[in-house]
Image (cartoon, rainbow, N blue to C red; front, side, top):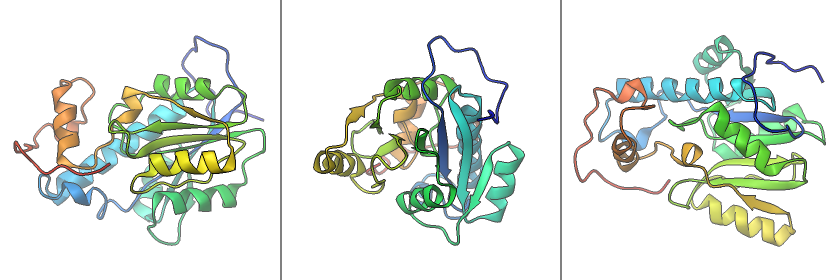
Length: 236
């Protein structure tokens, strides 16, 4: 198969079979609603596009990613993703992450030997190297690899080889749901803990945690945003 993104960074280890990546992206006007208490609508919109670009750029730069597909119902987001070099799968309406991933997988029918990476579009520390190490964790084995969020509650990424190895259960308590489904189906499963992929920005506490790591890597959209002490917590 011809590689769509030939200008990759050098790798330091042998590469497993290629994977396709799906990044579900909501409408920018409704995304990050749980940050409404600490960010203005314009700040949330700017943050949404900053995070989306980080995700798409990292995936396109990662060795082993054959195709990068943004799944969205927003024409604005679709145009934004295309300008960054990603493919677009237009959804009929905004929907949950699990439903969006299922629709894309059915619509594109990834090859059996290919991996399918379903990954959140709001990971401020994502990097090409972090994605590459996730691919390496799966190797060429038939299995599912889960990346939990930093609280161990949500699932920020799931790599399946073959693509249908494990049905996506993204949503509340998705990490436990994926573990239970894998046990029930006897699907070989690996858990890949990764700081760069484990932080997503859902609630004010996530913004505070990101700031506690220092300025390096923080989205520019957060530079002028003050998160009040004691801001509400929430589940990822």
